[in-house]
Amino acid sequence: MDIVVSGVRPTGNLHLGNYFGALKSFLKMQEENNCYFFIADYHSLTTHPIPADLHENVKTVLVEFLACGLDPEKATLYIQSDLPETAELYLLLNMNAYIGELERCTSFKEKIRTQPQNVNAGLLTYPTLMAADIIIHRAQKVPVGKDQEQHLEMTRTFANRFNRLYNVEYFPEPVAYNFGENLVKIPGLDGGLKMSKSDNENSSIFLADSPEIIRKKLMKAVTDTGQVDPAQPRSQGVKNLFDLMSYFSPPDTLAHFEHTYQAGAIRYGDMKKQLAEDIIVFTSPFREKMLALAADKQYLRKVAAMGAEKAHASASKTVREVREIIGFKSF
Image (cartoon, rainbow, N blue to C red):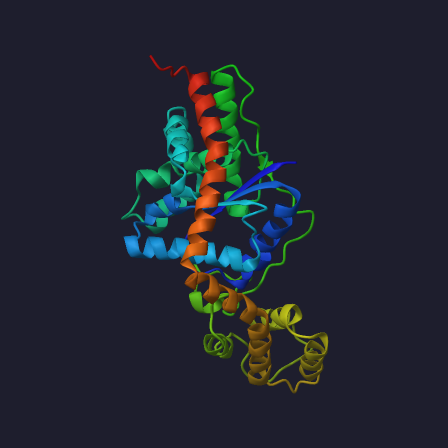
């Protein structure tokens, strides 16, 4: 059984794109592998959140993970800062990480460009902290998106460098998790190719959104203006609406609006109203579970404590053995 590790930064609510991308895959992974899923609150410190926001965002992600079906009995679900061994391994990896390779990291160069007022050491050493998150459990597989592939390659570099420096075969070389199928990409309401809150929160439908908010967002979704011409290619905004309807509406509903579009008689307002109701039907069970879980503080404490204990059992063994390999000994 492979060891799989994946983390998510606590930056607010999860949207439909997150669910159909990573979360649905996590549900499959926990049935087939020894999984460690963590909430990366150390990583979020690079943006300097205030204490109240940090705690609330961690709670939000924990609640949403549980509501979506992650099972703390099947997988290890923990909060990154509950595992101090991660910080120690991060420090040890930094001793053998070179500034030139860290500065060449694409995400670091992007941060320099987009936030020149906050280029901190945490951003520079982000890849070593990510590597520590992965190899502290000696993981073989990591589910990553395109934007994280370089970080995974650097994790392999750090793991292999450690093995080579100390003449051991200790850390396995982690590879990207093969999902075995194409992940569903949920398009945005702003005409974008994928739902992304980093671009525009109003382009995303969050699992925690109320019916009223979902209706408002759908009515603002980008479409065409003027007369519909079925002979011309659909604009990206219109294509996105039909794609969303194919995921969330009954087939006969989709067929009805396809027919009216081809007849040149479609009313996008009607289509948006119907799509909003269908998405509400899909998201309501998640939202109800989230509200119940958020109110059950005792259960959340139990889940976090259980996850920390299970993660500690794995991480403490790794750090103890790494210290021995490096040469740290007690007198």
